[in-house]
Length: 105
Image (tube, rainbow, N blue to C red; front, side, top):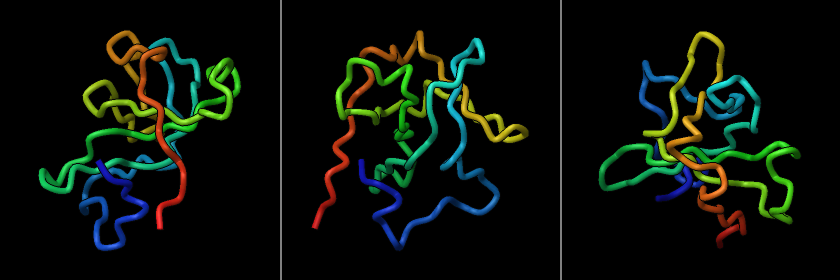
């Protein structure tokens, strides 16, 4: 999957919400972070993951690794509140994949 921010010729389709910048909350309403980017499968033309920058409380013990990927299937967009509700029981916050945020040339 590739970063939508780095794919200048791709955008979120008209009529669909763009959750970048939205708060990410657990099912019980706790804020765990903010959507930083969308990771796209270019062949399928679909967003596969939400890249989330974790809040301090959820990043504890992860060192400089403050970004995780949440599979789109483990998230529900709340367009009315500009929130993403993550099914963390399904996604498993401790097992979410770290994201390489190193700039690519």
